[in-house]
Image (cartoon, rainbow, N blue to C red):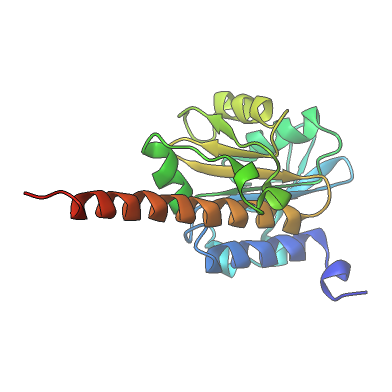
Length: 202
């Protein structure tokens, strides 16, 4: 049995957020993650630097939407709550702020993951959620609707979300794969544009 497999949900969340930060998928205050446990879920807190999270910082939110007084859960707890209520087979969720993915989609481009080996991590589709207020019920509902068919969704002007029926690392892998193919597509566009300009005789 690996050391990771015996970590608690709270320990896993602290580890995963440090990994997401080190990969450039989130900044110090951005992003959130959760793991289902019992009749609720553990979620990362609000306003604590994500690269410095400790297991004891995590907040337990019941499926009734209630949590103990003290540290507040991430402002996106409604999104996690709605997903766990709607999909009983989902066990982990991560929301990141993928810069390359956002740059690609905000430019009007999109991705077809089936063209890449990363489809193994992402799945065969990527949903797109329109720009909505962060932390809102509208955003939570739109994301929950989006992941009915796709396990990964891009939130325009915001970031990306991945769910996992297995473990939290599967969700992180999907978001890292999403960022990787976004980089490839952006560089393809950049290099193609440079080639076209080079061939123009002025």
